[in-house]
Image (cartoon, rainbow, N blue to C red; front, side, top):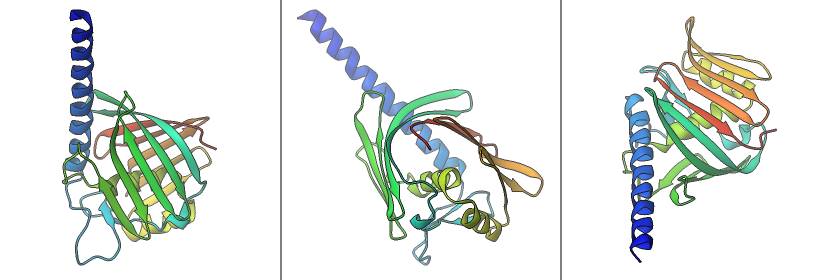
Length: 202
């Protein structure tokens, strides 16, 4: 009896630690982004990739390859590491993402459809801006041409190959993406955070 109680206590503590760690990471990333991601006066959702570069989220039809898969995500910010999973279903009609902790418990659901971003969670605060998650996803997985145009419209440049992408502000690389078999590495040099995504990527 005592052993079972202690085991349940440790599991509860582990769940709490995972939730707090992920919560801290998402709050930090949103704080680093500095500016608000939406405004009632704007009909199209946007984010600031720099303090002055307003990136308008692209329509879902610009996705390069549709996907429906579990993704294992390791994230890093200031030498701290975070691990979680996400089920991502995305095609030309929209994107749905369920964020899961290491134990497989749902922590939030994100949707991007018809130009509307929504996020529901009993864990994360309302201040979390899901538009930044969508923007990072688009930088990794959307077609080069519309992505290049959208970045140029906010004063940034895209350099792209089959296995890498780099976003420039002037001569400085602010975002770097590398792709290999089953792995996508995303580094935001300007904001100081990174992701490694593992999945069945084509």
